[in-house]
Length: 517
Image (cartoon, rainbow, N blue to C red; front, side, top):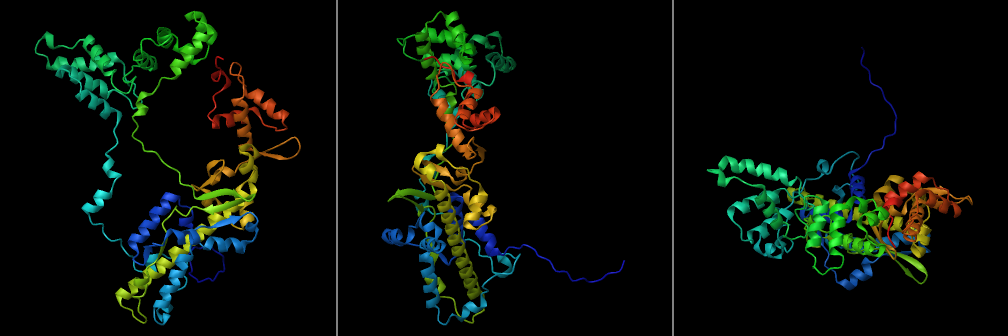
């Protein structure tokens, strides 16, 4: 085999480190972006948080664009760039403070493709965190205490309950068998057999053996703990425990206990006629009993939740002013950062020392980071403005007026690739008069109408939800009936599609929606 050299011409898509950084920032959510900015502040001494007054923030930080001006791209870009004008001004000041900006000649304007930051610039490690008592005092989140599980809550109540050591040991075994939802994960007989074997190995005489009545008595004591209904053997037992803890003068309390203990399966299948026949109850009485049972908690352990609430911070605000929809980026989603003028002025010309090189590298890295943030804000505002322009019907009238729209429509409008639109709309939220929605929410498929038009799948879901809300509770609408009702409105949808949309809305089937009126 003879070796030879060949010269070929070809095209290949490559990304520079600047482009990679811009794409990474573009797809970050609000929380991830804040974390990324915080890491940049800790690792790069050239960056600092801007401490401008609120008045200047309102003048220079708020960016708005109307639908009339959205067609003018140059106008949009100027509005977006206002938020980052602080950093641009600070960069210009930093360059003016350096005498004769010859030092910038050694910094390349653009890195070669397929390279990393470390290939050209020195990696700057973050300053190690120093433990401080003052910082610990300000850490209010960590001082709130650890989350409490259901077992911890029950053991805390057990420690406050006067009980013999023998019974306390049984109670601890019962508490260990409680699931996170509050019900026992095994039958009482299984718990008794496990404890009886342990007591038999440690017993010195017959009086030390464990009896089933002891476990039953301790279980009844644990079932009086908070939350009500805890340590129930099954759903029927859990509901019965909560009913027994209600005031004795509650109307129809005994009848509700009978329904829960003996006829819970009929109640679950909503066979009200057979239920009234077996319990000899009138319809008004059964309706009152169902109301009492529905007030109970089938999963009492969920009230002792260890999860913390997650709050959605909108990235974009949409409001109507003078009959025009205005789009504004949320100025509070990320801290405003700028280049530190003092450190930037330390950069010396024609100095190749390690310290000066370190400052040069971090200054250029900071400028690229600020430029990537500016590009992210511009793209987010441009895409949001285009979405609002196309979905004005939704903003005015609600989900039923949602128009069908796909990523390709927005990509053509803003002259970007569909992958870029997908990154912008993922985990980004818009605050509208209709509520807070992810930008992905405004994209949906469509179905054909009898008039030759198109109807959005989101609008169809809203119509289904409206029809179900207005249906007769004694005779709820089936999927076939909903299909015919939509057909009367000129919307051609298959029954299986209706079932899919109904399940996505968490609406149960018609047999499970049946109610007594």
